[in-house]
Each structure stands twice: as structure tokens, then as C-alpha cells.
Image 1: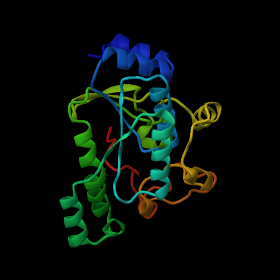
Image 2: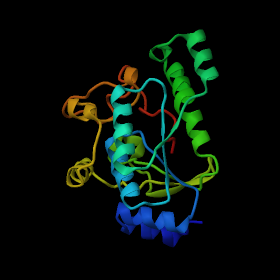
Image 3: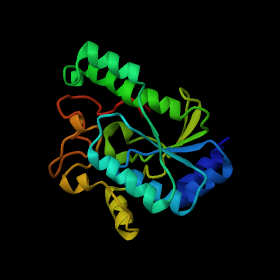
Image 4: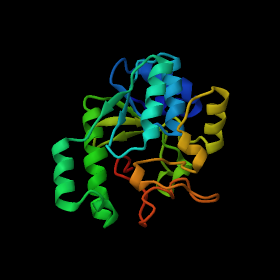
Length: 230
């Protein structure tokens, strides 16, 4: 259990101290989902460098950039710890593609959300089975619907705690950490891809745009895929 005192303590701790506290309080069942973005590379570095007993996993949607696989391989080599990979169910993908088309997500928000559900949400749910704490790389300034997210919260739908150690970090804080610790990152970031998802659903942004403006750039929505609904 996470008490109010624990939650208040986490607010005062650094990301590294918080991750150490969480992994000590829960001897097992602490997991971290990485999309290999800049924030997630920070957390991966902290977990692996400190040899914390936290399972690190990623979702391979089948539509990622080549650069994702390149970085995943580099991580495994550098830290000598494997990041577990979860895939969508092939039957779900086949049904969606055969009935609606390979790029049906461009045609409606409903189609896009269904694709995200098949390729991201269902594999995530499998990865979170038996988890007690789900660590994420969310930051409050990434989008409007993340502004009021707490550092730790109870996810009633999944019956686990959701811990966001970087929720109050600025983008500059992230960049500083990556540089100071010589952390590898997606080469796409140097080309204007700040928030990177699936290849057909991500474009580079221009200066002044919200970091998530390049996600599902053809639609007006909350720019979420359903992984983080609170």
C-alpha cells in the first residue's frame, strides 16, 4: 500500500530516490513501460544503472520506426539487461487490416483508436498483469490533459499504482539529464520528432508547437492513444 505519507514523501524526492523507494517498498510487481522516448530513456538509465528490481518492457506495435529497434538493441548492449517486448495479437491485427484496410486509422478517430487499442492497449494490459506499480515517463507539460496528473495515483481500472517520477520535470530537465549522463536517444529527436509513436502516425514538429502536435497530426483530439486515460 502507498499511504498519504508515502505520496507526500515521493513529491519531495528526486526521480532516482523515488524509484529506489518504490522498488524497496514493493519487492516485486514494479514495472516500467518504455516507448524509448527521451523521458523513458532517462528512467531506463536510472533503473538499469542502479540495478533496481524493476521489469522494463516496451510495446512493438508492428508500425514503429527503424530507429526504435536500433535504440532498443543499443540499450540491451549498454546496460546488459533486456527490455521485454510485447506484441499485439496477430488475429486482431489481421482482422482489422482485412476488414478496414492497412491505414484505416487515417479515416476516422474511431478507426485510429481501435488500431491503438489493438496494437497498444491490449498488449499493455497483458504486460501489466500481476503488476502492483506501473512506472511511466509522463510529464505534465506534454499536453493539457496531463497538466494535473499527480506524481502517484491509484489506477482503479487496472487495480495498481501509477507512478510518474518525471511528472514535474521540464523538457530542459530531460535534455540536461540525457547530456550529463551520456544517455543514448532516438536519432529522430534531432530531426524534429519529439513525441514519437508509430511511423505513419508521427510527424516532425516546428518550433513553438506542442511536443505532441506531431502525433495523429491529421485529427483534432486529445492526442492520446488510450494508454493513459487519467
